[in-house]
Image (cartoon, rainbow, N blue to C red; front, side, top):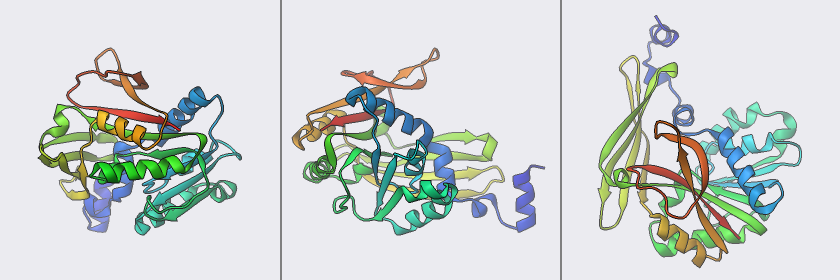
Length: 277
């Protein structure tokens, strides 16, 4: 009998009832250690110096902010999110694990990213496709203009995106996490080809047969790479570049992202976008 199954017997609760959706999310889709390495290495390649002040928009649990300040005493992070409950979760479960000096170098702001007022930062990130919530060209350009204004003169703005033919299908994809006793399900419930509206859910299925349905739901516009690059230029950025993931011997992604002008006709892909002020 596994420890998870023993816990179910002892508590009378299913694994789904005991699970924390934020912990499951990070185990499934985030690797903040690699993320911070990519941000810092790319910034240094472009600017010849280390970025010290990070602003993380749509920061959620602020795990990236916490990882950022671990680089040393000169590093500070600002997290911005409109959801007070998720910021509180981050304070309890992520900031609390930092040492005293590291915690003083993380600031969390409950605010709409369009209205947040912060010191100008070296590096601004908007990951996990959260900016897809802006569903018109004017609203997305407005956000990009706000991001541009929030950067120092040689600042850099980082985003991620996904695409490919499979991104426009109504489908489910399951990924097993045997070590932790659950499966992650990415569910593209609705896609409208005319507007590129997409509704997605994240579900979690557990070894004991229990399920956490619609742990997270997103209603977005599925933006394309040319649209995003054009809007970044219109918002004032001097250059915007797609960083494409390389492949290993089996043809799977290898986690290495480099500048690319054309990309590859993959059925599904994830890329970074790097916009220089």
